[in-house]
Amino acid sequence: MGPVTPPVHPSEDAAADPPAELVVDLNADLGEEVTDDAALLAVVTSANVACGYHAGSPAIMRVVCAEAARRGVSIGAQVSYDDREGFGRVPREVSYAVLREQVADQVGTLSVIAEAAGVAVRYVKPHGALYHRVAHDHDQARAVLDGSGSLPVLGLPGAVVLELAVAGERRAWHEGFPDRGYLPGGGLVPRDRPGAVLTDTAEIARRAVDLAREVDSVCLHGDTPGAVEHARAVRRALLEAGFRLAGL
Image (cartoon, rainbow, N blue to C red):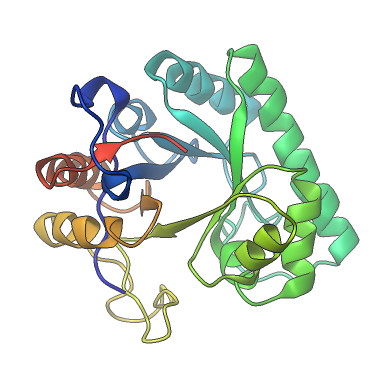
């Protein structure tokens, strides 16, 4: 898969809307206590908010949702396995019923906090090991879908969870990662392998623009070193390439 580009904020829209294919979302993982949430919220158009199972807390969720509401950034529930020690990146064997309830708990918690801030949770996005699992595991994918009501789903192109969402007449959005290496089959290079995480800002920005032509949203990892610098460069590159950024 080629490089991706981030979307442009509504405030930066041209007088006449550009062609639909030049509209893209720029999302990042927030509320994980590992990055500058406020700085990223000034750049992205959608925020995947950690719901407490791999990182975050109700207090952090409140701060992120309040700032997102102030800036017009869309809120998504970043659901995970119950794995704070492993930051949600450790594979877990969890039954359908347990995972469904865990997802429902996470989405429910964030929804209450978001509504208090005057916004709504707009989509669900699995995190870490769960993100990769629902790309091919039907039971785990169904648990995520059933636990998140009718929310649209954001995920990797070709993922089973997106296919099931579409089959169930739910909205499915595809995303690309300019700061991650890709395998020949379209999956992400495992983090323990060389080339998994990219750190060169210029390369990330270039790949973002390429990816933006293929996906609905471009994702930057908030825990990647230099995340804010990368996000600003990606946003700038997308705008210069003629993209309009719009939240999910």
